[in-house]
Image (cartoon, rainbow, N blue to C red; front, side, top):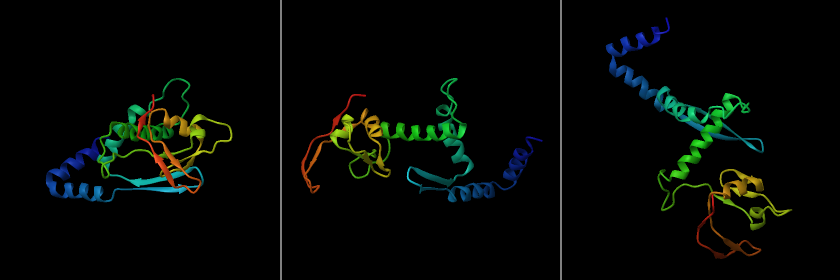
Length: 169
């Protein structure tokens, strides 16, 4: 009984391979992904993907969604999302994505020196596409990043821009 679906698909494919291909193409054409702000700190991710696309994504996520040990109590859905975020980080780190102009895609965070140093009373940082983020997040992201010093006047006019320098991992 468990193979009945597969047997029916193969019989249908043998009878009409062009129709089977068209069904697959139609499914791919219906793919979409949306990011919608959800309150102050969350973003709702909603989408639809064909079976082949889903299998590709799941194959990439499975090794990253395993429990990290007996103390890892995260539900599977949380581990899958954490894996998805990690896949994005790996891809950005590899520098294999298409460039925009002459720059490779990267996470852009703006923060004060006081925020990076963890000074008391320092403001949080600002992350492109995420908005304000806590100082601890800025510091974590800065651990393996390229920093560019930009000096501003009180009116936010740029007075000096340094060169990118790598930070120690």
